[in-house]
Image 1 (cartoon, rainbow, N blue to C red):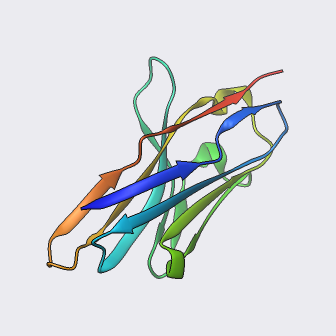
Image 2 (cartoon, helix red, strand yellow; image 1 turned 30 degrees about the vertical axis):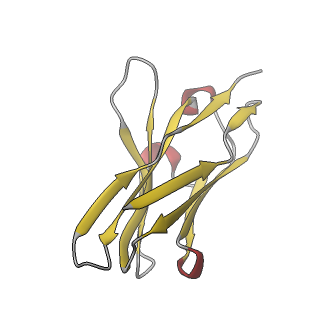
Amino acid sequence: QVQLVESGGGLVQPGGSLRLSCAASGNIFRIYFMGWYRQAPGKQRELVAVITSGGDTNCADSVKGRFTISRDNAKNTVYLQMNSLKPEDTAVYYCHVGGETGTSNTFATWGQGTQVTVSS
């Protein structure tokens, strides 16, 4: 079983910054990808950014140039640095991690979500 612990959400003014963290633990043999999704009220969950084990990244057009995803492979942790935040970035942010367990089973696990609110 794999667990994810997210942290770093909160309330910030427009133009401000936040850093989200997500640490994976449990029966992990290999992590293939780590990413962040978000869901605003009344909207579908959408991809924000994802990073592979090799360091390749992909992010939504709406956050390019403002958000940066990175990971610490030794700590099985992914980070999302969010700068120049806008009110439309307000959402619950979910960590999503996929990989392989020590018993050769694949997993794709979601975090519990962390609220990010951008408001003056």
